[in-house]
Image (cartoon, rainbow, N blue to C red; front, side):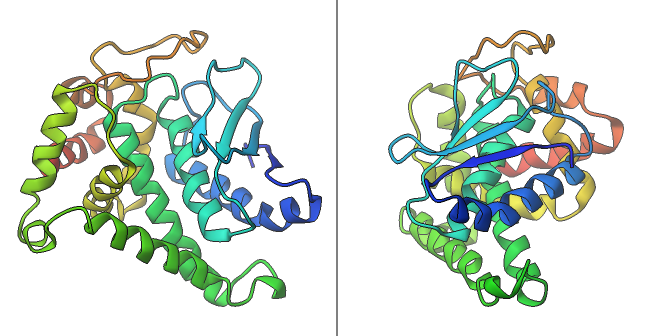
Length: 253
């Protein structure tokens, strides 16, 4: 595996070792799907339990490692999978430029990996001590969906995605904070576009799809509220991904 994951989530080493099959498989599968290194390269990933500001890649960025925080509390496979997929997505899309589109894809990735483990662990868990734990992933996804849809008119949203388009328009025009449930909803809206493995290759190009792309991998300065630019993204991706860029744009605008 190209990633070295150093877990410091709990004081108990047995807890860290117990969750390692989730983080290791997630990192390996994410890397397989994307098919190329992240913009700043492969570096050891230090994972800590941050009870206040978790699910983040810490800045300023270091030259020799990534430090990420999760808010997981007690040992819980679902929360670790959801949150680690999110921070790993941020690393792949470029942690220097946190656009609303990159954040939405991070939430989409979180849901994808909850599905991944919920299906795989039914018959192929890492060991006997994990038998039956597949339900933790599907249960968390159900809870996330329920929470997200409590914030919108469900019948309106099922009839069309006009509500999401309006929220995306606001994100495009404003630098204001947006709640995580909004990005959950956008991620769920985008998930059907990422059923085929090749679509995940777009993660490598998200950092170039901004209004002022960063091309120097040695430049570790961050722009936490960069703006996505679909024209630049379409120009950056290879021909087989241009249609995906168009479909994402049409889905959200």
